[in-house]
Structure formats: structure tokens, C-alpha cells
Image (tube, rainbow, N blue to C red; front, top):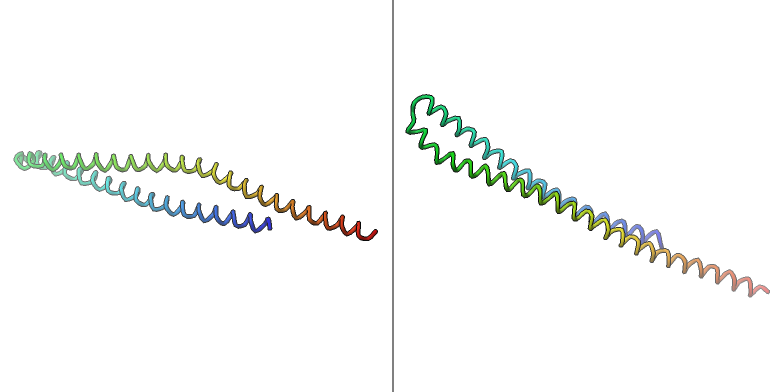
Length: 141
């Protein structure tokens, strides 16, 4: 009857939402890994900047100049990992907002359709009870 239909509908909605949450959790873990990669690239660049400064301060200019290529790679790596983290964050944010609004409307439509069907079935059952009651009253006369 009606309660079972509503229960099934709620189970399907919960199962779908649970799957979405698990996927989002995976994406957030991946984003966290990308941010860690950026932080590591930044730490490496800072370390190399300090090494170059130490070499320059101690008068070892030839070795300090050789650090320039390494620092250029470090800067590129920092920028790439930053962009990756930024785009992933923006992508997650906008896709989740879009998914949430779309899914909310879709779930509402599905729920209203199922509830309407359940009420139609309920009304049929009530009508049948009344029909049987009226027949019973007429047969007693």
C-alpha cells in the first residue's frame, strides 16, 4: 500500500544520495592529495630558494647560478600544482551546486509523482470500501 511505496521511494533516494556522497568523498580525497602535492612543490621551492641564498651569501656564485634552472622548474611545478588544485576546487564547487539543484528538482518531481500514485491507489481502496458498504446496506433491505 501507500506506506510501502513511500518507504521504497525513500530507500531509493537514500541509496542514490549515499552513492553521491561516496563519489564526492572520493573527489574530496583526490583534491586533498592535489593540494598536498602543491604544498610539497612549494616547500621544495622554498628549500631551493634558501639553498641559493646561502650559496650567494657564502660567495659561491657559480653554484648559485646553477640553482637557477632548478628554481625555474620549481616555480613551474608550483604554478602547475596550484592551477590543478584551483581548477579542481572550482570544478567540484560548481558541479556540486549544479548537481544539488538539479537533483533537488528531480527528487521533488519523483516524490510528487509517487505520492500522487499512492494517493490514487488509496482513494481507490477507500472508494471500494464505500462501494462495499453501500452494497451491504442495499442488500439488507
